[in-house]
Length: 486
Image (cartoon, rainbow, N blue to C red; front, side):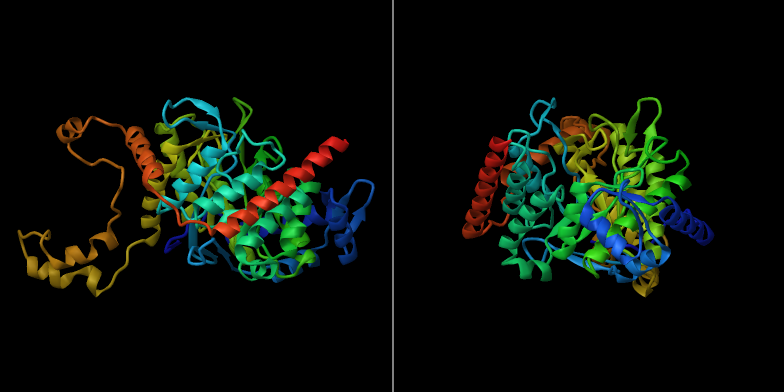
């Protein structure tokens, strides 16, 4: 966790109000499609105007305002070890590992291949060891060698076994969401304990433009009921699924987020939510989205400002479009990460390990990004002025022409004031050459290999592990019966 002393702003107070007013008009006049009957009925009972045929809910201003008041301004997410907790509130910034990549760059060959359950295990162990990464997905990579009906549960088990840091949970449908909650309840010590000490970070991604899918809304309702935190974060693409203008995208995104929060708070007042974004531009040259675009950074900054405007904790994203750990990956990752962090985004997803806008996971990039996160963390702390840091007594003692290397003040404040890199090389050319002339990617690969060889996460209780495996077997049997009956 980093307590930020700086905050970047791009929208004036008037601009925030203009976006807010445009959002209210979208929700009242145009409405949102809610493809889940229970949620649609709740909205109607609360006073929204419902077109049942089109499944459109037109949401009045007072419902939005009530939901914002009910949503907590902060909450705590716990890991398997209660000491590994994230307190989402003002000025705190956390970095999360990316999630769900279908491909991985092989650590030995450097070639792209389909990701496996072993990769999921490795990335959890890597996340557990990387000091600047605070949270892991339920699967950094999708385990493609496991039948899809239970792949997310095998990945969750791997997560609980290989890290004590907080995890995500599956929200794509009622059954999947409930299975995730069952798994976490075993680790927490029961459903009531899970409500008191939430361990799953769920995702509700509205489908731009202006839609809430049936499956993710089912997950939203269950997570709200069980008091598991939810990120409401559209993945709007400027010029494709949102207006090409960033102000237009923000107004539409805001309507998607706030309508999702309304549903969550109607389901269970006080349900913890993160005001989030995964939005960026469509690259018009390729037709692809790009998390590394400078516009993605601007959207993150504006999203943070809107979250602060409503008094809600926030989630942003960062990333790069590169296919390997090269200069492009470095500058796009650093630029978007720093913009999100300096804006005051509380939880920055995809902060480590992602390439090609999250389509590829990379062990080397995870290690490199951990270094970037450490440097950004130092920048966020800013410069503190006090009698001790102004150091007038030390300056007087050293005087003209002296040196500070042997001063006690230097020893005392070095690590407090300077970020000490772990893989960045600052040696002179000759010494670097004698050490093998390794570039950063080679150094990161070696560190990743060392971590995976030597790091041993805190073991999961054997009884808990067996109970989790039992749930997985039950789900696999349930899914076999369902598929055979079709």
